[in-house]
Length: 386
Image (cartoon, rainbow, N blue to C red):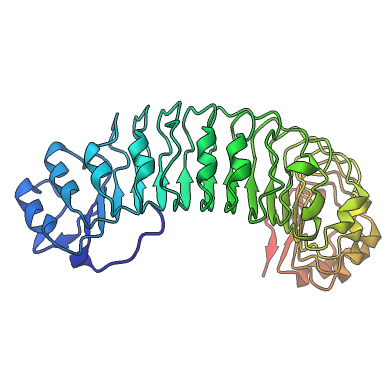
């Protein structure tokens, strides 16, 4: 569980896997731990964090759940098949971790806890969420990854304070429509769902900054789906044959990841991405260096390894802010002089190409990786680093 409020040991009970913190002279979580140690701790007024993870939740430990002042509880990795009814009575709870159990259904009362801010239900076997409109409208982080969900109930659009939502690793064929109305959302993770298209427009989510859609089957990103202030977009392992038009986010996007797609061309409009700093295009279908990138004056890191590029243009020196250039596993035979005159370049990785000459000017770089090229056949094959 993330973001626990830090407390002193005498105000915190921890019974966690691999840890034996001591409280009142007794080792908690050890084999000698017996129920008689629980009662004095459960009476403490300042108990705020309760960790009973990795098989530590047993019938005798249920007594601890009557502690009314507990704010965070970790019941992960206990092979639970149902949510303990006791925690549904704890109105003070702000954080609940029920990840890595065997839950198939979730009681609607869990989403009604008035002070709940973080809920982790990842790595279970949940097929459906309660259809009732959740009352925990102050929820900030919801992790539903690694389940069997095929949809989200419409009522979940009421989670207007939600900042982070993870629905990765489910059976969602598109982004559920309620997400398009979660106006407070800042981070959305929806990778590895088998999605074929975006579905729900995200264009009205003005606070959405980071979108993860890796490992799906998406081949288009409609402009209407583009959040206006997006900063990071991850689309690796999909079916794109082009860099999508990200609409209003052109002025704000800083990280764009399209590795392991089928991209072979770059649109001229990429020059309008004035804030773009990191561009991942490795593992695509480029046979030539995309000259459109030469206009990306803000770019600092460029990943073009694992393509079929043969020639690097001399005009690459126009990319004056470039610090890291990754060109490994291509078909490059020669590096132009302009590469070694780039003022901010510190990392030049051209391993596993067909380069036959080692330029000594590369020794001034922090990393100059020529491993796996023909010129290294009779000398060390390690990257030169300083």
